[in-house]
Length: 183
Ligand SMILES: Nc1nc2c(ncn2[C@@H]2O[C@H](COP(=O)(O)OP(=O)(O)OP(=O)(O)O)[C@@H](O)[C@H]2O)c(=O)[nH]1
Picture 1 (cartoon, rainbow, N blue to C red):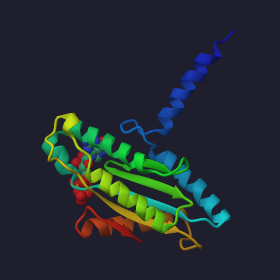
Picture 2: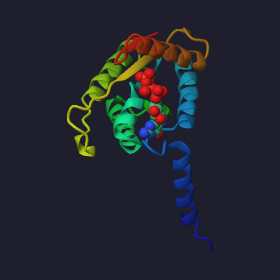
Picture 3: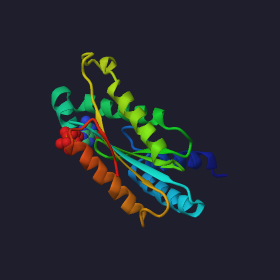
C-alpha cells in the first residue's frame, strides 16, 4: 500500500510555495492576481465596493545601502507583518506586489473605510522599531500609498483599478512620500 499521507504532506508544502511569498510569508503576486479576479467578479455581481491599495516603502535603497540586504530583508518582513495586523477581515488580503511594494485587497470596503485602514498602516509603519535587529532606536521608515476603489462601475476592469492605485501611488511619491493619495 502507498503511504498517501506522505504525498499529501508534500503536496501541501508545494502548494504553500506556490501561493506564499517566501521572504515575507504573505501572499505572492500569483495569489494576489487570483484574489483580485475573484473579488472583482463577486463585488460587481453583489454591487459592493472593492478597494485596492498599493504600498511602497520610501527610500528603501538607502535602507539597504546603510544597513545591508539582510537587515533590508528583515525590514520587509516587519512591514508585511505590520500591514497584515492592520487588516480588518478574513477576506481582505495583503500580498507582496514586487521588491519593496505590497498590495492590499479590501472586498466590500468603501473608500472611506479603506482610507482609514491605509492611515492606520501608515502610522503603524512609522512606529516600527528596528532595535531587535540591532539598529539604533532612531531608525525609522515610511511608506507611500495609492488607493483606488471600484464602486458603481467606475472602472471597467480590475486592471484599470490597479492602474488607478498605481497612478495615486506615483502621485504620493512625487508629492514628497510618507503620504496616502486617493484616486
Ligand atoms: N533587502 C532587500 N531589498 C530589496 C528586495 N527587493 C527589492 N529590494 C530593494 O529595494 C530597493 C528599491 O529601490 P528603488 O526602486 O530605488 O526605490 P526606493 O529607494 O525605495 O525609493 P522610492 O521608492 O522612490 O522612495 C532596491 O535597492 C532593491 O534592491 C528584497 O527582497 N530584499
